Length: 197
Image 1 (cartoon, rainbow, N blue to C red):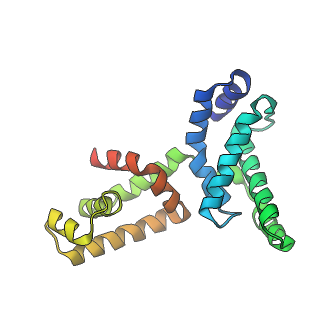
Image 2 (image 1 turned 90 degrees about the vertical axis):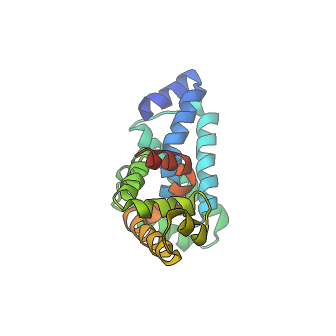
C-alpha cells in the first residue's frame, strides 16, 4: 500500500495496521530529515515520535492537498521548528535554520524511504570482500572483540582492525549521515540478508 492510501485508511477507517506500516516506512527517514534542524539525535527521535502521535490523535482532521510524503515532511519540519522555538532563546539561530534549509530545497526528494536506505547499506556491504563483511558483522552486531574475531576467522588482529576500518570508511562515504540511525533500526534485517547471500 502506498503512503497516500495508508493515510486514507488511517483518517477514514482508524486503521491501526496502516498507521504501524506508515510509521515503520517513514520514521527512520524523517529522523534523518529532522537532523537538518536539530543536532541531538535523541531529541529528533522524540520529535518525530510526536509527529506520529499527533497524526494518530488528529487522524479525523487530516487534509492532504499534495502527497502523504510531503504532508509528513511538512509536519516534521514544523515540529522541529516548534521544538527549537521552545528550547532556544536565540531567534537568529532558528531563523538561520529556516533560511538555510527552506530556500530552494526540495525536501520530498531528499527524504529517502527506509527500504531505499537499507538497500544502499546492503549494497555497500556486498561490494566489499567477504572477509570485510564478516569482520564488520561480528564486531558491530555480535559484539565480538578483535581477538575473538581474529581467532574465529583465522586472521591476525591487525587484519581485523584494518578490515573493520576500511568497511566503516566505505559505509561513511556511501551513507554519510544515515549510518547511525540505520544501524540502530536495521540490525536484524541486515544480518539476515547478508548471511543469506
